[in-house]
Amino acid sequence: MSVIDTLISGLQVLPGVGPKSAQRMALHLLLREREAGEALAHAMHVAMRDVRQCNLCRNLTEQDICGLCKDAKRDAGLLCVIESPADVLAIEQAGGYRGFYFVLNGRLSPLDGVGPGQLGIDQLLQRIDQLSPAELILATNPTVEGEATAHYIAQRVGDKVANISRIAHGVPLGGEIEYTDGGTLTHALQGRRTIV
Image 1 (tube, rainbow, N blue to C red):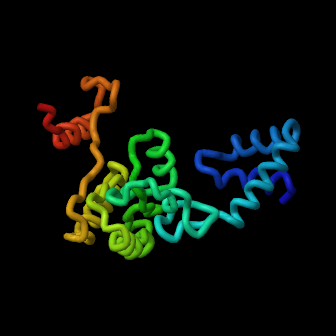
Image 2 (image 1 turned 45 degrees about the horizontal axis):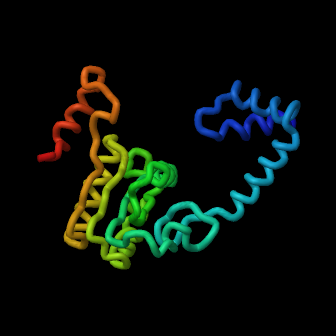
Image 3 (image 1 turned 90 degrees about the vertical axis):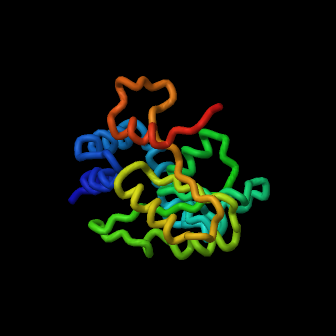
């Protein structure tokens, strides 16, 4: 296998990148962006070597404890359980949430061999004991596996947290009801709240 073939094959590990996209990326880097390609290769090497999971929340970090867990201004009364570091980024970019996180790095999926051990449920229980949050927010995705994971965690946490909540699911802001699928509408109606 040539060096170019190895590069193309290596790029295919990225999500959504097939053989043609990988070939286009590799040729672009080699023909037009060699310096950027070398910078990318260096950044990848450093990241693969230095990035690991935070000892407290399991988010990705270069330190033993991530910056979010070190932030004394965060609200220890709130702990949000999410599936991936991408979810942390999305919530932080949206703003409005100032509590702590716990990253599962997956969701329960027996068919894929993902059980409670892989999700760090025991570590989550330890984090709850450390923080003693007033509210545990279960922000797993609204999929069958995400719902099962949220249900499992709620059962395991039991009476350790006074308030266990689930993020709302439903009609997106700016969306129109007539174009919303039935499952989303059902969740929206079940998760309705009183406004007056």
